[in-house]
Length: 78
Image (cartoon, rainbow, N blue to C red):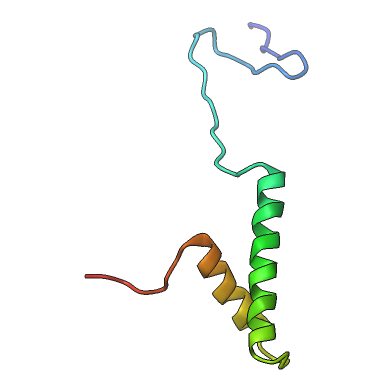
């Protein structure tokens, strides 16, 4: 019976063919995410100030700021 193939550390196990699969991730770098979150946070705070500092709208402010910063108007066109 043939011996099972094992991979060295950090190397893929192959079946003898040269085909390999690659995984592509679409996440932006952490610094970019941090900057984006800061822009959303700042805009949400501006909404809070525009309302005169009235509490109770944090989630609404965040979602509105997020949509604005990400460029989503929330309106659909036909």
